[in-house]
Image (cartoon, rainbow, N blue to C red; front, side, top):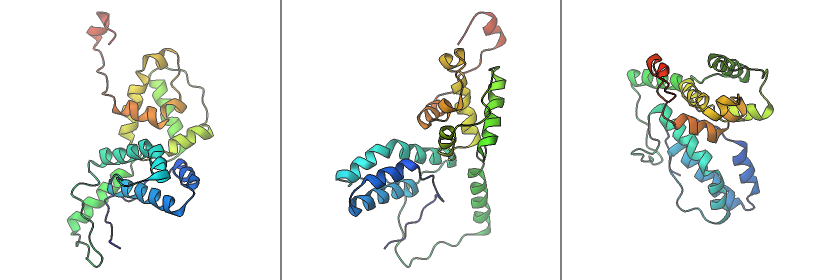
Length: 214
């Protein structure tokens, strides 16, 4: 079997992947689904030959999987399947020079700089953000659902969280109704939507005095 070299060291394996995997009735479908999932996450390769229930399983999870891959590629500024050629068995890996080793260690360190490592530190960060936009904050702990959502966003950096929150807090409906809560912000579809929005330019004092609102 050919050795599959990958730039990526790991990814979050969501509970939904496991649930879908367990719904598949045959080992053939299970293997096909897992192979497609691993090749997409580690190599960036999209499956083209899935059939039957394995294909349905893939379709049900593809948005989540693609979002994870995009998050990794955007964060590391690399493309997983860019000029990728799997080496054959017996081919030695390229020797890494000291300079390249330092570069790799720096990249790994940067990847590990998440917004926070625990639910408690995220809650404090979120509270500070709400205080910054002068919104009352009464939530003292994350719910089990909030924690699950937060754990599924560990791929993203602190800067990703800052950008997403800035766009989220500028959402007029949620802002006017004081609905800036973790359960909405941490839902992956919402988080990615806010992350991908261009940050709105803040109005100058002169513009505000002239009555401009956006």
